[in-house]
Each structure stands twice: as C-alpha cells, then as structure tokens.
Length: 78
Image (cartoon, one colour):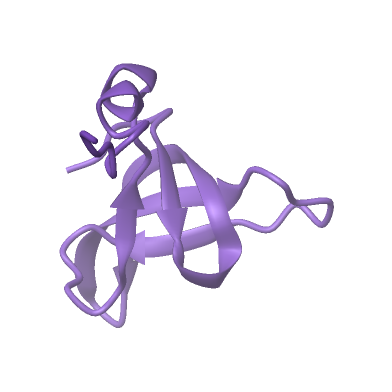
C-alpha cells in the first residue's frame, strides 16, 4: 500500500504524487481510493484509483539509495 506523498509511476501519466487516500461511495458501494496527480501537469489533472485494483499498474520509484545498487548492473571483469 502506498502513502500520502509517495511518488509512483502510473501508466501513461508518468510520475504521479499521491495526494490523499480516501473512501468514495459510488452506486452504493464504498471503496478506498488513491487520489493522485501527475507531477508534470499543467492542466491540474486529478486521478482516483481504487486501492484494491489489480488491473491498474502502479510502480514504485526507486529511492536514491536503491538506485545506487543498480547504477552499473552490467559491470564486467576483464
């Protein structure tokens, strides 16, 4: 589960920031949603995605410490 303030990669929208995690009731069914927005967005787009949704791909961004471990994955010895 993600937290408010986390940066994620969300489909065609790219890097997005999670602004809120809230309940929404639609057609009598109450579901938890992530509310997020693309970081590079001049149109102020807001996206709501159900927290429990296996059809939507959301990926973690690597933190700086983890990126360091992958900085040269093809290091060869000669």
